[in-house]
Length: 142
Image (cartoon, rainbow, N blue to C red; front, top):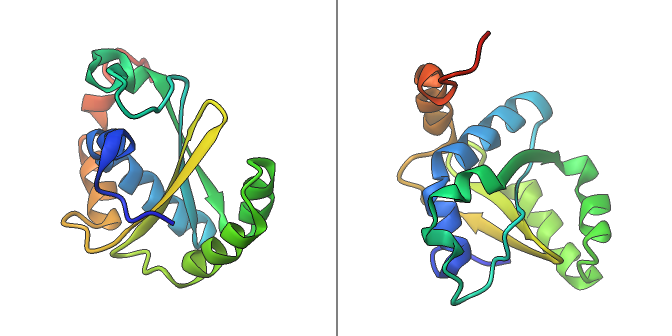
C-alpha cells in the first residue's frame, strides 16, 4: 500500500482532498471502517496532462466501500491475494478520526493509498463540506 504524496494520483488526491475526507468520515459514521474509492474516467498515468484540465472534477466519482465488502471489491479488481492480505489489516487498524484509506480507480488500474498525519482530518473535511454545502450545490434545485 502506498503512502500518498507524489505523482499524478497524488495530484488528484490533493485537488479533491476535502471530498475524500468528507466521504471517509461520512462512510465511517454510517458503515464503520472502510475505503473511499475515487473513480476517474480519465487515464491516470504519469506524464499525463489530464490533471491540469478544469474538467477533472466532472470526471470523478466518489463512493465508500465498507470493510466487510472490501475483499470482494479487491478481488473484482484482481488485486493479488498477497496485497489483499496487507490491505485488510490496514483497514482494520487505521484511525478514522485522523487517517483515511482510499483507492483511485482509473481504466483497468486501482491504486490504494493510506493517508496518515493529515493536516485536515476527515471529521474536519466533513464539517467544512457540510457547512459550505450550498456552494457545492449551486444550480441544483432542492
